[in-house]
Length: 450
Image (cartoon, rainbow, N blue to C red):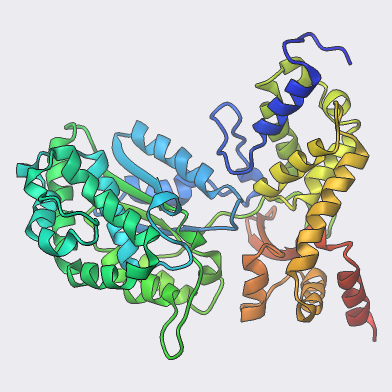
């Protein structure tokens, strides 16, 4: 192989390329690809940003999509756009430090918002209603922070850090989680009042041209649904029963929510409480009739090209010969992702695992596909193969529990597009990796029989 740049050995080059497709790392501004053309014209500023910039009152929006489809990437782009328009944006990924996804309640989310606000806008204690709130309740709250230190003896940074300690302990100490939540729940009305007072004071201390504060609570869609017998599920309790609390902050807020809530009988209640939920669609690599979508495939080529170009521009120009052994190999890999960003990254990394030098061969890509396909084979229950076969034929999924489970684990994918007359179409299909699985093919034969 000849390349103008020989700054890497073959193994170093594979490592660089492998790392460029890290599935859980948002793209840099240089590697971002605008896919609204094959996402049904979805644009983050129009879908989420305009409501913030054009409203004179605080707004509360909910936002979802398949996990790994690019929600965080779009939120971070919105953060940048709003900051350029003089908003103060507090973004946090809640599952990193703030919540335990398998056991989350509304108080955890409220306290996480509190923690990040007080950390990013450091008001002196005398002007800080949240520190005053904490101090007045310290005798009750110090057990949550697992400390015997006197609050008034702490420095400003030390006082602020107590909010982080409480959220950390809520996540890390399951034996005390219920007791800790009961205490926080008791203080919820006063916490919301102190939080809103903090927001009002903070807005006066921020630069005069600041247009407002925006909170973005990301990764809440990773919360697992739990339900005790005779009780509401935690989804209903958090997003429906406690919607007044989540909506009650005197600033703009965007919460991510699990996709299964939006595609369910809860959809109208969510819209009543928060306005219409916003869904980030999949990238359409195939048309509804199953034929390849040239525009979608070009977008994924561009995505791969840009990441390779950051390593070696000359190598990127040989995408179909030096990086992959042919354009057909590259197209096959893209199509098998189903238009799912994280799946694309994972397929590329798996394919690289099968080679010792470039180019990535058709055999390596096929091995990658087979490994990924095995995951879906293990995911689908025996009773679900015929459901998938029916959706594959009709291109429409229902809103019952079976379909929602398949949607949540990405066995079913949802797309949208506008036709030439401007009419919006939404359709569903199985993940392409399922198509060649024997059980699916057998189910497809059964439902096609007269």
